Length: 245
Image (tube, rainbow, N blue to C red; front, side):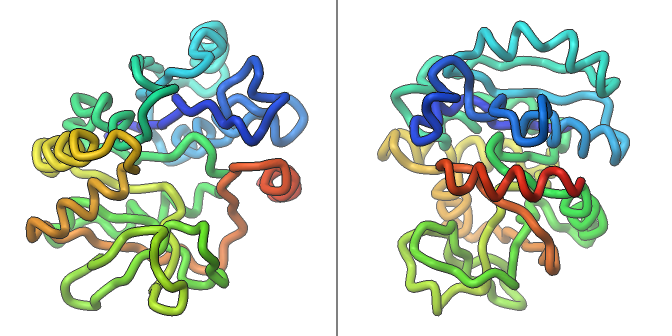
């Protein structure tokens, strides 16, 4: 198993930090960045290799690659997303389609979360589960969250931001365990998704899989402090959370 990080996004709502850096390299605890925290989590659960999808300001990640490898004892492979500033992340995850064949824990490059999330996903492996989404079933939901409706027997049924929060079982937090046996089907669903509309999310690719009859499972993370960092308010919360880990 390897780690996979989506770190190609521009994060325009975090300017001026992202004038020169991709969102994943915005500091959240002293010089510690969002990417540092994710790589630290991966190293803590015993992973030795991580692929990182880069795009916007990718040179900043390339410049830090050797230092990050040395700090976390990881072998990093950087994968270029040539449309990072034009298309949404369904295409970005598709760029990592070869990496997924190795079994991966996927983490969005803007999610501050503790290593307990990765451990929860690993504990949920087995019994034929191919894709397992980390789900927050505790948080009070609003319009912006990536909401999920779960059937106890059939798994995730609906995955979208465009849903009445009252309908949702919980929020997908941007971390997924993907078995290599799902790689081919997921890559095809992602391709169908971004070819339909390049502005769609990879979660829309998950929905495409569900629509095709593929079962996507979820793993509730419990009462965990985490945040997806999209704007300066999120960044302030991320900094408050990051110093605990």
